Amino acid sequence: MLLPAQLGAMRLGIRAGWQRPTPVPRIGAAAAPPPAYSRIVAAPRISGDNTTAGDCVETGCFNAVQTALARAGIFTPLADAAVLALYSRLTGYVPGNAATDNGTDPDVMFAWWQGNPIAGYRLVSATPLDPRDGGGIRGAISRAGGVAAILALSTENQNQRVLMPDGVPGSWGRHFVWLDGYDGGIISGTSWGRPFYLDGAYFDHGFVIGVYELAIAKAE
Image 1: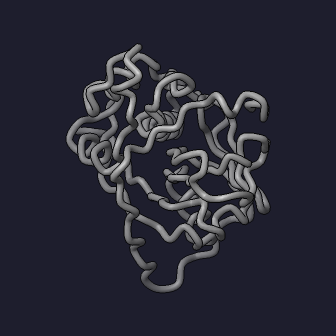
Image 2 (image 1 turned 30 degrees about the vertical axis):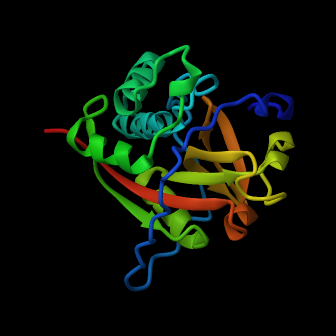
């Protein structure tokens, strides 16, 4: 876990111009999610060098693939270099050139992934969920192994081990993370290659601006 003193130096990376998705309504009554769900402990957490480059979107998607691989019994970590190479391909990022480090539009990443497998897995669909629907989000995590979330982080969050809905949403910036567990009121995931924690109240005050259930399948 990153200490609060380290967080302020971390990179984010949602490209300006990204539009919040319209959540897809749930149809019918959904089964209650289990009271807790834990990620596969042996699944690697990769950083994609997101500590120094704004490739959080690519990094989060690669961590989603790590979950899919772990579910298939494969625990080989994906290479950070592959994440950075994809970031460069999608955005024109040039390592060492800060002017080109402008983040990624998640919709561009999803469109690319639907036609191009990552480690043998392609994206079938990215279904927007209601960020305030805690039951639906927990259900998606337990069903799919995780969800992708876009956060409007505040500067106050830089000093928190568990992110709370303090300060102004987005005053720090927007960030893409892979959330793959929950227990009680805490939602857990991976960011910057480390464990990452959100208080459940974070979803109720405008700090979570996008949540996607990713359907990932083995490419044929």
